[in-house]
Length: 610
Image (cartoon, rainbow, N blue to C red):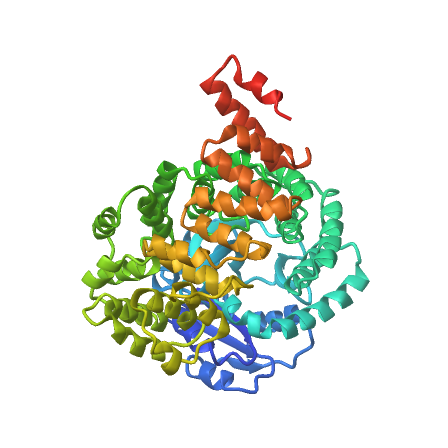
């Protein structure tokens, strides 16, 4: 019997960018380290040799299972720990391994693999059999996406709380095309031998999905699903369904995806990700209230068990963010607050959540109230300053001094407005000279609207789009003409955030009412600052020229419902096809609201409207 309890086995090739971190994370906690190199041309072997004398060469045979089994043949420990070079254990996780195997009553222990996508942000997690007894019956099978099996059969596994972090997705975007082609070639060879193999069809679908070939991905997922149904309780069934649902969503097959997600949830009710997908599908189909119900169910159910493929936060932060977005759309300020603060308990530095809160406050309160609210937030001053800049709370910008976390653009904006609010606002011209487009284009419009400084025409290289917007603030502006939508809308948004409403009205005087795309863009700009009355005004002008635009018609009906204009909401929603689920939901909600107001007459009166 070996006196070594733990042997860590790895196969590597050209991993010098991540291998050292990996080995540092596991080497102190195992009794033996086996590294098998399959043909590195970088410093991989040299790095490995710093940690262990057990570094072996293995000629690559286009078969991952063979390489891993070679590594197993070199191990002398009672238990094997398998890890890849782009993975690592945190200290507190690695420390759990020895006690976990000593207490394990089975021959295999699964760990939780967490995918880190950048700046320690995690996107998904799944379980994988990475710790198992070193016995001859345990060998890897399959040329790619290799699996450890017991005499070729699925293992009886214990699930542990040990977490292994995977960072491969951070760099996969750069090299994914070559990787997918390599994997696809191996899988296609294997699939020719067994074309109905569940595991191979499932894995080849993942490669096609990575290559954005959704049709082929779905084709192989259907084969895998149909075959797995012949084997009740097949271990891959939940993963196949999860992958199929995600692919249907990516392929915009929302109705079909909803059906599959509902069927899958009936089989795996504790898999919260399926409930979340139902919410996403319903939201895309326009059934907003039903989507919100599904997101609420996610929170009630909590995180998916570790043996499922899952996304981090599926029972908390992810549905909360969806509910937050829906409450913003419905203009329910109470719910916006409720969901925002629930999210901020989890992500206290999520600046994007504060922006709607402050913009809502600015619509119903005053900038002073917004400044007080900003000061009350339990976050660092540097975060408060970033937020003040985002929503252009000038007084707060001038009172906060911690600029440590500002980007270059934020620093330029801060410098610009500090100068503009100083005793010598025309010094802002020197700040404008340091800016690059597109930021300089619309801020130049703001600068001229405040200062009327004619020097800009001589000292700045002004784009035609900027010149045109500036004309609105000159004594003899030119006649309306076709306007650049981007510069115009950014300048308008800037003026609205600053509370410069007279200047905003002056700028709008340049609008050519026959430029429908600009009318639509202006509507969106007013919607962004929750000025729904003016948003509706410009959307309506746009619809006079394009009455068959379904998206804008639906948006108008939605805004009318949110502003309690129920009869008008019904009129606009009724102009859309009966198959439009969101339109029908708006009509039903409007009728229900009117019935509460006047139970005896509302429905009768509305039904008489042509």
